Length: 217
Image: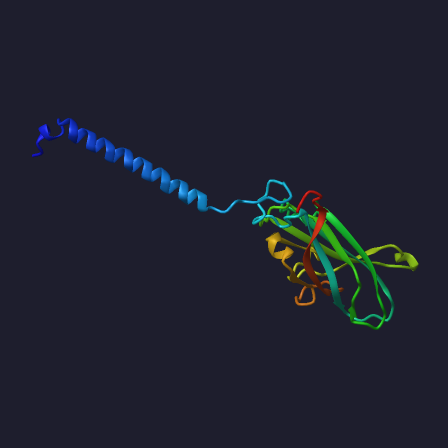
């Protein structure tokens, strides 16, 4: 059993107090050293997003979807097509194109199976690389001449046997991955559904500065 009289000594109590104070000071010095070693978190464009998480550190982020080529069945006549691409930071998967929308019009020449229009779509996106985003796509042909003049006929781009919707939605896409450059293939020719017109599109996604920061270094 410990001798309580030992702690009654003023010298012992003073020594214990000094050890306690030295321990606190040592802890504070170590904490300050650790905090001092943490690199400074920079935010070049002042948007509240640290540069390491910012899709575009020098301004408002943008994504460009460049259409590389469209593979399709051959026809004896030229055909007028419209390709629509939508981008939504809110992860809306309804297919209603509720976000930003880009519409590309081009002609598929007769007796060809590959078309390479020089078109692209640019969208302003959330600077923070969230994963809860989606892009949507659809393709249709506008008939010309006769009783069907102006009628829109859907083409299938969705890589799945969906007999009701020829369009699709790619959800839970990481915009940071898209910004770093990625090849996107939408293949409606790979399924066995009942849609008469099918196509395969190839896109390349990349980043761009939608609005450049004037005060950035």
